[in-house]
Image (cartoon, rainbow, N blue to C red; front, side, top):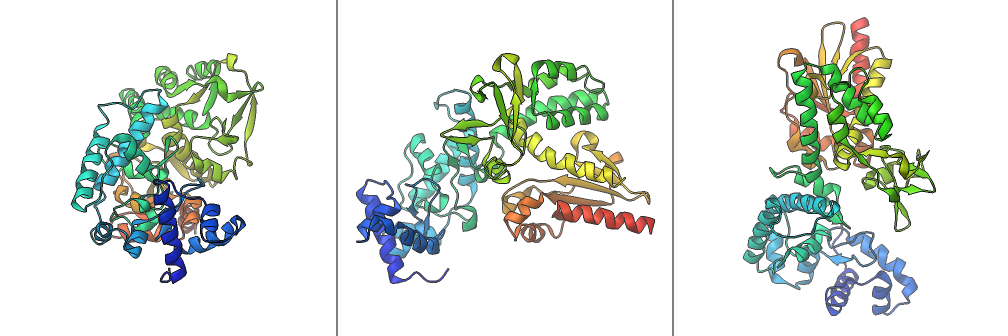
Length: 452
């Protein structure tokens, strides 16, 4: 952005004065307008001026009292010399990733009805310790207890009194919105050993399925199991029992039962059950808004106005849904995987889902003997995804001639630099990264060359 003007500096100074005068409670746009000597109706002009300063010098969320002057903004005003030092000497990403992991485990405990109490998750405690050490080295007062640290996590990271080595465009989000970790939080958490709570729960459950399939040497059974879960995120107890006796699933009845949970009674409205038009999971009305498992569904369904389905259902009929971690890490990416598979089948290519009990997502065999391996990644932040892109397995029956990581087109559309970021980070590795639509076009080009 351009160098802040004198008017910008006056506005930043006013926001800080109002915030400090209210014991850290951020002002609303109307309050800023009045304090600046205007009518409260001038808040639109204030917002337009602030947009020029976001996210480097100010940041905010959808909450009316979330406006914060960032550490860079404070340094610009010379309000706190210790914070100017923090800008010059940013903190490594280690404390932030550990805190993110800890947030997911704390949120998981709250969702299960457990209180926040010691001993805290190891990642959370380690993250707090590292954060405190970094703060003290810079003359910044660290959060003194978990509740205060969680308040930090509900603010955009750019507004914290210390800065991090991550690019600022990654840090204009908080780690926590309400009681739910943000996408930034979950993707940061996947980069540490303690992991992301829902991912770990999902992996533990799916590991049992993979082991059972491997013992029985039933690749077909594993594929049938996974497709059933993806295509049936909501079922009746009777329907699930019937499915567990079907050919291909008959050996996975216990595992199938463990993947689902009863739908709470408050999801049923007037003997109806509302389902998300994107992932097919249950919609819950809270604070006058429909809510799914994450806000991405809200965006892709235009605030749940596209594709939403209504089932005639009563709580007494024993309806079930996939557990939340399964929804996030199996159903949502699986929708893309199955859709690509169907398109390949429609084009009459020899394609296989999740070969080698999910060694990667898709294997395509061309008539000329060429074999392609494909893995799909549905991440919001390419900089965080890049470190997880490693060469795909190519042993035995998993051998391939070309390997690909493919990204949903809607992710790429959200960020024009998405693919360029991944290309730069992985250019020396033995695979190609592209959008799903590009990959399907490449398949057709290869197929036409074979037949040409």
